[in-house]
Length: 145
Image (cartoon, rainbow, N blue to C red; front, side):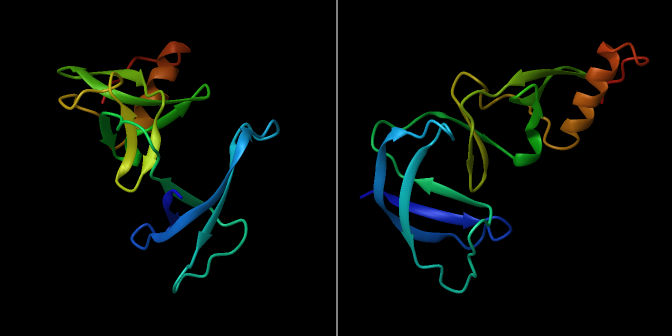
């Protein structure tokens, strides 16, 4: 059985440890996801159906290399996740973060997307996206933060 921890949104400091009872052999054609049946004892938390949660599974196979960026660094645009990386003294470049996953410490970006030495914008990233889109639409002078 695969070990799993469940984090109730808003209670990230209180992970609930559980186990995987069964994994469906195929992807669900309606959701595009794979069904898992998990068993947990929520302890002092009141976990209700429909509550947003994040499950962390220990999967077999080789570890994946990458970096973790804070949640505030991720912006969503055209169905993808992006971060802004400092590319000059006062310039930032938007870079797609494919294959990212939420972890207890932030978003995991696989190797090849970001390097440990990259300076990633972790605050006001959404403002940079807004300024970029505004300048592309001809909505005024380009401002960079």
